[in-house]
Length: 199
Image (cartoon, rainbow, N blue to C red):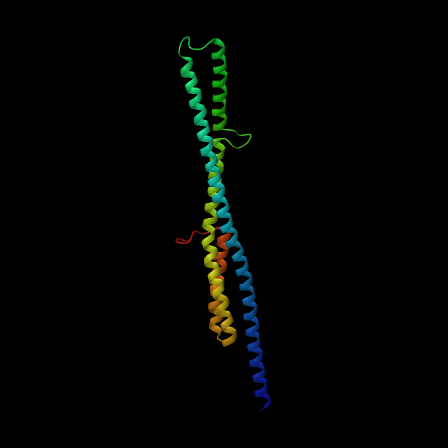
């Protein structure tokens, strides 16, 4: 073997080592992006579930308030009707009934809106709708994370095969899928673009 042939073999080995090193670094970056995507997807799923439960609880509380409010309104109406019967109640009994009617009407108003506790029907409905909006936002995010994870996993597999086989076009395909997966991940966090069929 001549010196120039040995030099060419060493250059080829260095070139192959650089290819493997760069591809390995790309795999590490893709793995990091995959981990971030997985975390984003898990958080979106948890947020959707939690806000769905929160909205359902608020609607149940709203219904309970509505039932109680209706009961108080019906009781007050009944007392008012009974008070229209002349001579049926003594003045003292009428005064007591009027106190009850006033208390019932006060409860009816309090159940309708109670800003101090945020537990009136009006406030509960607004809180439930806000929880639904958060749930819907998280549900829009989730598919982007799912597809980003798949693309990043495929990109890692292609890059790994490229290292073993030395086929450079696999790295190009891996990089393209990695970029697409990264864009979907970013869109999952920010919802910049709504892609039909995904979000």
